[in-house]
Length: 338
DNA sequence: AGCCGTCCAACTATTGAAAC
DNA sequence: GTTTCAATAGTTGGACGGCT
Image (cartoon, rainbow, N blue to C red; front, top):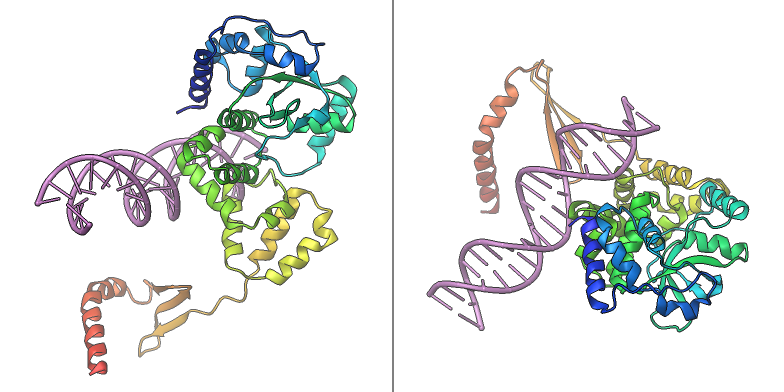
């Protein structure tokens, strides 16, 4: 199922659940949020679901809500809590600083999406817009928000899809988000829909997130330039369990801490990629001293590499004799046991 | 060239229905 | 109750095209 299809299904379901779906009695922007909450409802949602075929992201949905007459309310930041599933690693790098400057100078241009907090009255939970809330809190300004009633499932799907639409979550952040959803008991279907990915990709994403310790991922940070292949490679190196003491030391060094997230990733990768000297392959020679083949051992595998120039067609001959060799081998073992 | 995300095919594991 | 079989879900390895 595509992202659009999922949202469409959710929202059309919501429209059916609300009998007065076409009324549009949204509160004016200046109204207190707790009062306006009940008013921001289905009219806009109905209009939104009707036009969803053309809507790509949750941010577009928020704009659609506003376009269809729904209110943007101002909410004090202390009344807003993050989503129950975090999707972003702390990183106050260049992008974040740019956002701070932009909001300080021009104010908050687009509203965030929140839902009434399911267990705390007079509080709201963010579907998307976490960074803007952090910035506005630091500037002691209220947050412009659209309030919508959302189930847990709808919230995480919208949250994930908004991030997917803006492509602003790094690979590992998406992995942690998927992991968090899994820990919350959401099934694969919801997680796939939320991230807008196929089961194959989700499987790989989760295997990477599962195989690296959370502390290491947090120490590295989002590493936006590292995608699946490099995170998978890092997970493989880490699983080998080598250089653990050196890794611990690296994570505490100022060289590591002062670097940006991508550079921290590279430092860890470089450290875990340091290997001991590779064992020399054994060489098999003919009576005349010509090199016939070499035996290379790695882990549980043994490779027999033939030199086709020194002994042409010898490899084919050996391959043709393998069954007989195995029979001889089994026989020799049974003789030894007797 | 190297890295990325996406997609495909083949495989294994799990689940549930049907047959005995 | 047990076994068999098919369908489904999840995993893995690798190919491919796009991007920098």
